[in-house]
Length: 511
Image 1: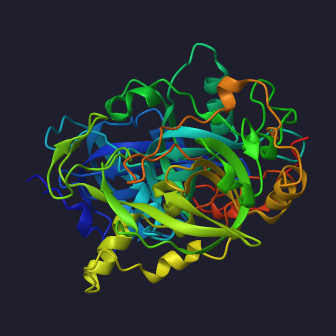
Image 2: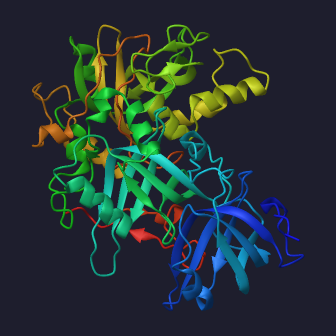
């Protein structure tokens, strides 16, 4: 008489005679600090229930050549323990360990879904909606490279890339060692042009950032798989042709220092001037200035508008489905930040418009999440400014803005509130009223790589500039990369087995 198949979700430590019909979703090797290797894998049954499996080093030779990713099989007889991995791939409270008496038979099981990925939504990462110690799959398009550390004695390769999803949410992705080297090799290959879509499996999520695990993560870059090709096809046409911005060190010789500082890149092709001079500008002008956010400029539009779920365009009607000019079919437009704030410097004051990506990064939550939270708490008046928005005020920052004298406002393109960065802008670049009125910005060569494009902005917030904010969401905005302590422990890579502690990494000066 044949033994019936058990359910994965029912697995507990009451017996060792479990019989499972599963697909091997992923398999990887882990080598500890003593050089001892073991295997780990994730299996899933027809109901989509998953559990992590460990094959100890003393059984490695028996199974290493037999187990194949994506194969379906019947597994008999396993020992069951509590899932005590420091970083867990699935939510099952138990893990399976192969015994000497464990058997496995490959068999075609059509009722089990094929290998797939379990992508974590970027907005949930920004909002902290991730269980502690969970590993997630992520996919996004690289928009910027904001830090590179070379492989030098005592230091590991790490590349920090800003990834953007199809809704415009951005997160930092730190790629360590072979993962960072793989990305740089792809990026520097002259044959590889256009957008770079990254799929990272088993990514560690912590404090609004992600990174690879030391073992188990797989990095897929623009590979010919349905998930990446589908993501690429949904990018706006212009973004499909653009490589990530080189905002860190020069990648043509990435083991050396950067020729241009972050400040030089920030002021590139802009007029650096004090806030008091803004009222004298007669035409739309790209400017850099230093100011402190003072108070909200309340308008009839409130603090958000309804826009496309992919790009930042304004929806023609917030209650109706439509097809956006970017090609996205929008069933329900979503709230996006557009907040007008008075900024000041001394006696001067001007109105700045902060857009969706800047606000989401500083606040650590999307406008959609904030709006839904208000409604759930009984506040349905869209003109009420939630208390959380106060985080945008009383911040002294360096701004790169498009001054629009027709509307007596400036649209924010980039910003930074790092104290040393702001001080350098203020002391070395800002032109006061009694100085020359000529353009005062250090021009950096390689214009193609450094310029930021943006559409002409309307006063109604129908367009959102392609802003660049190099920061950890919900923390201070930092784009300077020289000499400060960066807490990579927040997203530092570790083994899935949880045996390798994270470390704080000292970022070296770029020159």
